[in-house]
Image (cartoon, rainbow, N blue to C red; front, side):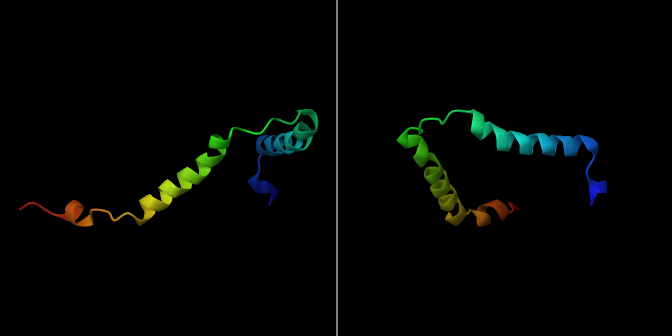
Length: 66
C-alpha cells in the first residue's frame, strides 16, 4: 500500500492533515455570510435539476441534411 505514495505526496497529506487539525484552534470564528450567499447553492442545484430534466433537441442534432 505504501508503494503507491511517494515521499512528497505523504508529506503533503501529513501537512494538510496537520493544518486541518491546528488551524481551527488558531483562527478566530468568522461571522456568518449574508443570507443571499447562503441561498446560492440552492439556486445552483435548482438550475442543475432543470437542466437535467429539460428535453434536449436530439432530433435536430441528429438530423442529416441530404
